[in-house]
Image (cartoon, rainbow, N blue to C red; front, side, top):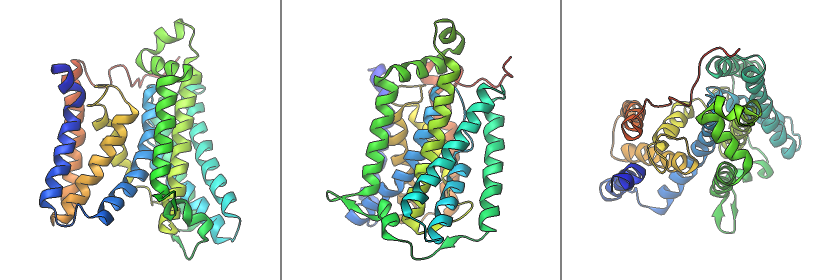
Length: 321
C-alpha cells in the first residue's frame, strides 16, 4: 500500500480535484469547456515534456519559454510576409532547435552550468524576439494551412490533441524503450558512473537539451497557429507552469524522477485547476498563489517520498573541468 500511495497518491488527488470542479464549478463539465481545457493543456504539456527531457539528463532548461516566443515570432514574421506556411513552420522549429543546440554546446563543450547557459540563451532569445517585432505583435488573418495545425480536426479529433498524443508517445518511447533513453536516464541519475561504464554522457546531455529546444519550437508553432498572432513574450505565461508540471509530475508514477506520464497528467491538473478557479469566480492572483504552493509542495513531497533531497542526483551546478 505505501508503494501504491507513493506512485498514485497525487494522481488520485488530481482526479478528486477534477471531480470537485465537475460538481461545484458552473459549466466546467460542458463539452466545449472540456475541449478548451484539453487544448490549453496541449501547449503546456508539450513545452513541459521538453523541460522533462532536459531534466532526465540532469540539466535545467530555463530558456524554453523565451525560445518558444522567439520561434513563434519567426513563424509569424514569415507568415506575415506571405511565405509558404511550411517554411514558417520549419523555420520556427529550426531556430528553436538551434537555440537548444547552443545550450547543449554551452553545457558540454564550454562546461558552463545549464542554469547559467539557459538563462543567457533566454535573454538572447527575448532580445531577438523584441528586435524582430519592435515590441508589436504580428496579428492578422493567417492562412488556414498554418492555423489548421492547431484549430483543425483530423478523424474527428482536434489536431492539438493529436499533437499532444504524438509528442507524449514518442518522448515516452524514447526514454523507456530505446538504448538512447536508457543512457539518458543513467546520465541524469549518476553521470560519473555512467561515463565510467562507457556511456557518452556529453552526447546524452546534448540530446536532452536539443530535444527541449525542438519541443519549444513545436509549442511555438501550435500556439501561434491557434491564436493567429505572435508576440515577443507570448509563451512567457507557460514558463512557471511548465516547471510546476514537471515538479508535480515527479510526485507520481516514478516518485522523485522526471517522467513523461507524470508531466502530462500534472499539466492537465494545473490547467483544470486554473479553469476551475476562474469558473468559481476566484481572483486572478489566486492562481499564482496556488501555483507557488504547488511548486513548493511538489518538491517537499518528492523529498519525503524518496527520502532524499529533491534533485540530489539531477542537478549539478558545479563548473565542470
